[in-house]
Length: 374
Image 1 (cartoon, rainbow, N blue to C red):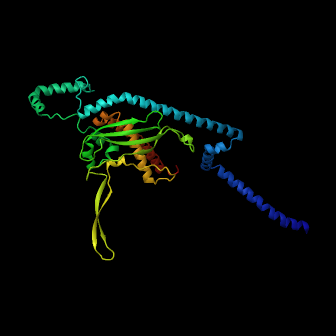
Image 2: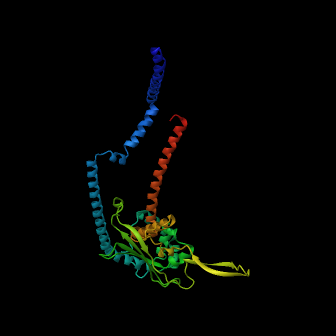
Image 3: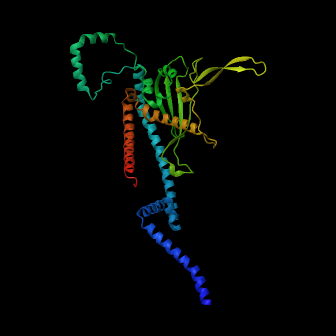
């Protein structure tokens, strides 16, 4: 009876797990033989094993210690790089002094204070020969008409609306200009960049020189950009060179009724008790390029700006940098549109690359529709 109870009880309970284990192993073997499952599993393992942080965590403590030493060296490199950019700023100041006589002469030609000599106004264009042949043909046919037109042709002073035309040609600037800003900008005679003095914190000033006008009494409007060229203590590895960190404008002495940065609105108010209605006038901010001289201040008290304010401040910094690096040094090319065409060609090249990438993605989608298994 003992043998029978043993055979009836224990084996019947102990053989079931064996069968389950055998079935599980069989199922596992079948799954592991599926190439799609294996590929997915391998991709998952690769993504985990190739993550830099996960790899670093697997290294021995002695290796991690040496990596920390390398990071200290990297921080020292960042500080040396910061000194390099400080010396670059000194060089910019030095060469700005060499450029200035040329920019002063540019201003004299633009305003008409000085007329360029024949040698100074001589310029050989790429299509000079074609232009010469075409000119000769026209001269033979309509020489009399041209002489008459030349006699009637006006001779304006300097180069009219030089800087205003640059504003119109450059999208980044024209977007800031309202219709009522235009007559004021036509009085703009020069834009200059002034670098901070040796030993002073890194900065630059944009000077906008205006002729006498009916809008404000200032001869010069200024915008000062302060820069930082040192690694952030909290994130030293993010340092990539000097960056604009803050800016200040100036007070515009508007003449009565000429301030385009504000507008007057009328508002009706009703008295709660008596029910009478009165009309009040109120000044509110108005879109204008001249708000450029009343910039938003960067947060210095630890409070973060909202997203719109951050975007506005970043755009302001970008415009200041664009004036300094592109517009002022190459003003005549932005006036003629040649520099603008170069910028547009570069942007179109980037867009073309994006379009090509988009086409490739479209081809992948087409393949997926043809072969659902893929």
